[in-house]
Amino acid sequence: MERHSQRVAYGETIVELGAENPNVVALEADLGKSTMSTLFQQAYPERYFEMGIAEADMISTAAGLAASGKIAFCSTFAVFAAGRAYDQIRQTVAIGKLNVKICGSSSGLSDFGDGSTHQAVEDVAIMTAIPNLTVFTPADADEVRLAVRAAAEIEGPVYIRVVRNDLPTYTKGEFKPGKLSILRPGNDVAIIAHGVMVEAAMNAADILEAKGISACVVNASTMKPFDSEGVQQLAQQVKAIVTAEDHSRIGGLASHVALALRQSSTPMDYVAIDDRFGQSAHSAKELMEYYGLTAEAIVDKAIALLD
Image (cartoon, rainbow, N blue to C red):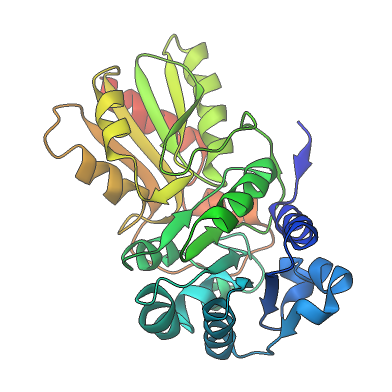
């Protein structure tokens, strides 16, 4: 299956938005060639602000631009967006409900070569805990394009989680913020995933089908506001639920689904990163296998629940 870059999709889409709306501006923290915000710089240099290795300054400047009527897109690695700029996001952007859109690039374990300091395995937990902040976790490049456009339409702050590695396209060309989307129907087990783990979920469904088990694959591309009602409806249609994410099991998709199921008798389990940091490796695939973020792990959890 053909694979496409979420980072390129982000860069190209903010360029499109820049052509459509002169109030769209872009800010970067010295990583534009990686986040692909340099595409905006090439098209609209007068609306591009390179802030250097200063994420807090970037968010504060974006807040000022938003307060003056601009739609400010900021990008950096997810670990720095959620970590170094947390205070400015919380105190200024979120409390002020300002029109700042943050792209957390190279999220999860996708920045395999740089190790734990550059791998955001807790960013969803941090960002979803901040009031007034919408959080998108797109499954592929096409969904990134739609999420960026949806972010531009939302009045208020948005965080978009993007991975470094190219991904196959599974989404169906529509994006409904705050709603789960079913990518594959099934009635035995539901696999709820987001981001890079949607591919593992789809592969797991194929393996389960070969074993005579019908698996529904669900894309949770909005982590906030989270579709708890959708999870509850899903729980009435299947015998078990497995979540899959390239994020800590604490505060991410597993936590959100467990909270939604607190009054349900449908059993659930999760595939996620245990309470630990990442590390360096030769490839993202090597890391995903080491941390158990695989289709096979999802299959094992599903079979155990059904048994």
